Length: 152
Image (tube, rainbow, N blue to C red; front, top):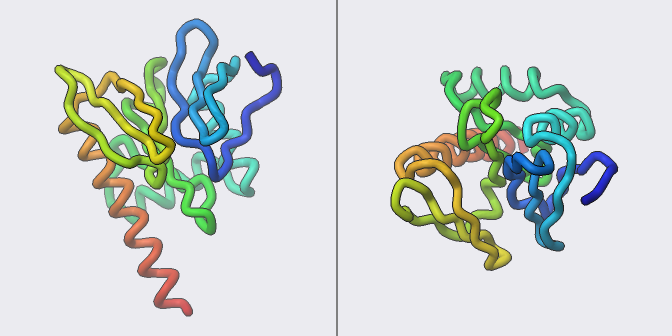
């Protein structure tokens, strides 16, 4: 268990809700339990990289024209986009890094996610809902990348 606030970085794969501790962090260096909730880690990450969660959320809503389980751009130059598995206010909501997913597949009513590290986790979300979240986050990423290329 770490006591310091976890800083999202380019190695972060997932921030999973954990009722015993607050969150379980999966990153390229390993797995950690921290006291903060997934939502507070996401909010801290936005602040750490110079914005607010509300600002990042409103930007994504504007780009996607959607308000439902909006993906969040934590830091755009490193392509750090995370999406929620449930409503942010739900205590079981986890956040997944789009660019760290290798594959995902249905496992009963849940979804098994394999990350680029080879680590696998089971997420309490249907395959269909998870796939929709991946597509929503991918669309946000695609629009941002297109806008960046047009500016160059």
